[in-house]
Length: 371
Image: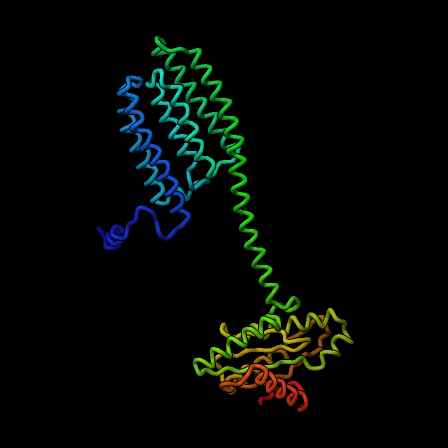
């Protein structure tokens, strides 16, 4: 035995722990096993009461373990995942129906009572089957019971009240049609509820994103950005770490709107936001502070690192083409930097970054300033 096989054998569990869906399928399978376990003593009591032949009991003792061991191996090896219905609901139901057909052939006058077992089997279909699948299983059930009646005609015609058997067959047909319709409806309600929960989670996520994102640019809005900045300030206060702010403003942005229209201005804002976002590390974040101003939080970065980052962003934006605004059209930005001082309030560090931005613009725009 290989070492890997030995390790897998040692860590083997009856129900898998690494796949919750497969674990759920196996738990449902064990529910069916429990029903088999309950029916076996019932068959033995029927034998003691003289209403069932010993062949039926012997068959149960052989067939039930074979069916369940085979299904468990199929589940545990993952072969069920290759099927259209990984739960094998219809397969398990049909296997149980065939077993009932075998027992009913030897059940003598107790056949009428065993018909209730069909209802128990169909209950498992509520987990997965729709109305059409329920009807297919119901037809299969009626054919098996009809097969029992035909076999009794051929081999045991004596002592059988066939008029009663026909009546029971017709009654079973009515019950199965009704059960299939109701069971399929319940199953569809369950599936729709599952879909509704999934859609609800999706809509909640959309709403959450709308609440924290700027609608135009897709980056964080000011409210959420301020919350993140306050968190970063508190984290740095606890750890003694450092971070920097970069206040970025698009130079002469009003001219873009005046000369090319507000749609062109919106396109410029989106492009600038995208270029900033692509330059950030995973731990850094930015948001639209207002109008054409963007606030960038550079975590675990001192002023020297912030200057390198700001220059990179400034050059990338300056060299970026804007085909829709003409071949010679250029967008430039001015950036003001400030480094967090321990104990400093958020408003103060923003104010210093804003002052640095003002100095950069006053110095001729398209440059980086620091305070």
